[in-house]
Image (cartoon, rainbow, N blue to C red; front, side, top):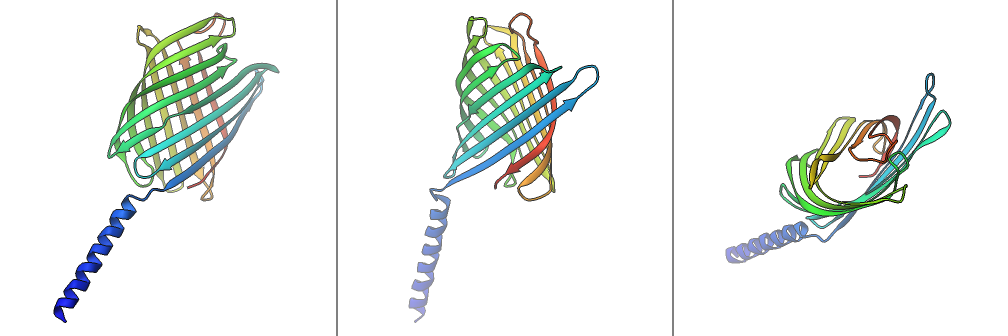
Length: 244
């Protein structure tokens, strides 16, 4: 009787262990979505209207693979003249294990503000999460080598190899959340020719899915077409929808 009890206990332990191992190896796919509509209107010395929308879909596969796909569109007028019409689409598939990350990147961009008809980016490189937790809070740095092809509105083209350093900060506390991404991308042949991009979003969540958000974005590009601005700053207020 005692021997049978020991056999039964051992069998239960083996079964539970196998189930736990199986759960850890679960071949699952998760899809997360976030979308934002925002705008800005000012009048006085300069009448300005700005509309922006951004969307993000992240595919999570198993325990170590993810593939965020993000896209944004910005439309802006100053004194009823079209100044901004910006398209941006990129994906950064990655592998992670512990704090280590390895990223790939593919990007596409169009910018009326900077005179860009088409810009394509491809690259890859490592990253490291200094902090991350189950709530999605994270502080991480990545460093990628990218190859960039730009086709300008004046018919000229430019091919550049860049180093792309990214700092990502994601933090949440109760109903507040902060997401910030900063890129520094110098030309590998001339470090004085660089691009800097920074975007921060502060959100106040009033339901599990909806939030009011304020977004600050800044871009600087050392080399642009003659007559085009080298930098641009936008502050917008809008509504964000996201799934878990």
